[in-house]
Length: 360
View 1: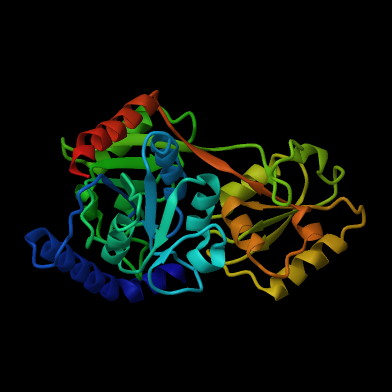
View 2: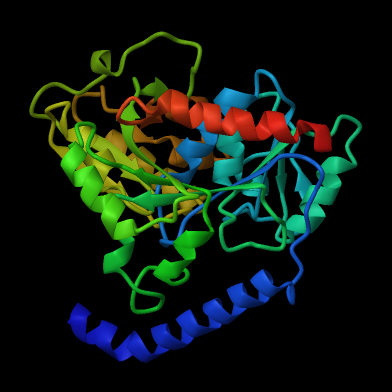
């Protein structure tokens, strides 16, 4: 059935691919304007629709840079209830700026977060601040070319090879496979932690990058789950798990929740899965569903474990009370560069930023 649907949609994919190719050619030729700004601008993006791990990579960049530079992030703010340009303030939530920008804001208190559908307008607003950023990271910006990035990072999902996919709507690519050539750095993410050199070389050949492009491989590691209601506590999730044999309630509203569910299976409890669409705007009705799920547990010890991105959106729902928050835990993740290339990656980023600081 799925194959038949893809065949039916194939002509539309060809048309979409053609339109995106023409658009990119217009940018390359200067017929569509790409505005350059006098400071280091790093773009993080992908070719594939859905989660490839852009946000963990953005966090890695900010951890590297925020100690030495005033940093800002600029994104569309997907899933927010507001429109237009917004420079985030402390009182903002996932509802006003989007879940991923809010997640970054909470992790990096000194970070200036901006959201705007028009990225040029967002950049101009950031540079008008009394203390403008010294580095801007553009999140999910590989196809948003109106702002010219000095360093472009393309994130590729190991589990969804670009060379086996095709454009929307029959496939999952936002533009053709050829678009990878625009990236300066390519990060193949979500690899097995023990990816072999042989498989890495096979992927390198399939990607067929230019000599000017640098390829890295990365995996996602899971950190200790944290309680949403009390982030200062040193409590461990293991101390709050239901008894063996009882269900562990897990909640995910992300593009690809399967790795999260596999991680939860490691706790040795059967899972009761609450699945929502990616970037789902949780409502009072959803909150009531969570309460019912917790009350249905006979042990009185039930908790809900969710993803970090979902936790940011749940915390923004007005109907969430302190008792419910205290029974929700979230699973942080971290991106790690493989093959002892972490320092090489970091040095490339630092070198680009240092060399372009004089332009600010």
